[in-house]
Length: 144
Image 1 (cartoon, one colour):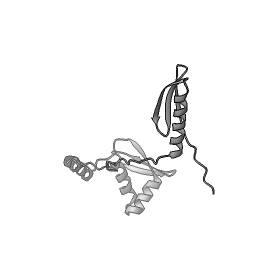
Image 2 (cartoon, rainbow, N blue to C red):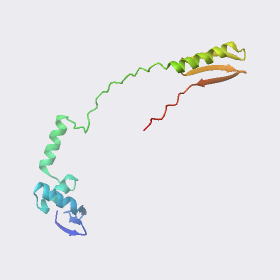
Image 3 (spheres, one colour):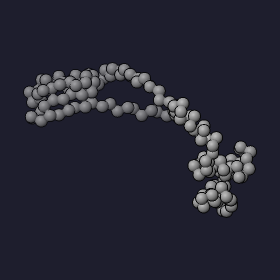
Image 4 (cartoon, rainbow, N blue to C red):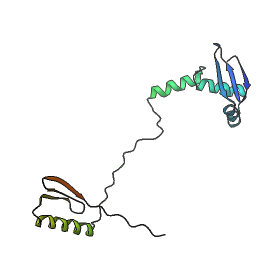
């Protein structure tokens, strides 16, 4: 790092290779306050963290971490158990499906009557066309 200049809330840093890098003044001042650094140290830290400067200490620590094979994950993957909910039987819906099934069995126009789910679904054929009767119950609005 050759030199640096602060202009309009941005530090402009000129590197040895002639390249110019912009760094937020807010970040620099916050880092100086939190880590008790001077501005030059904070700028060098930012440049080394972002790959503009080589820091031998940081490089050796990186190599040690890679050699040990330890990967730091933000969140470990934990296998979650799937919860199995058992549905409560809905007697009203079962009675309605049973009544529809009996009606269709007594009527000659319906054929291939199949109760897929005893409280929800009946499939059948009417006039050589396939139909599916799906029973849904709407919930009552909660009173306030």
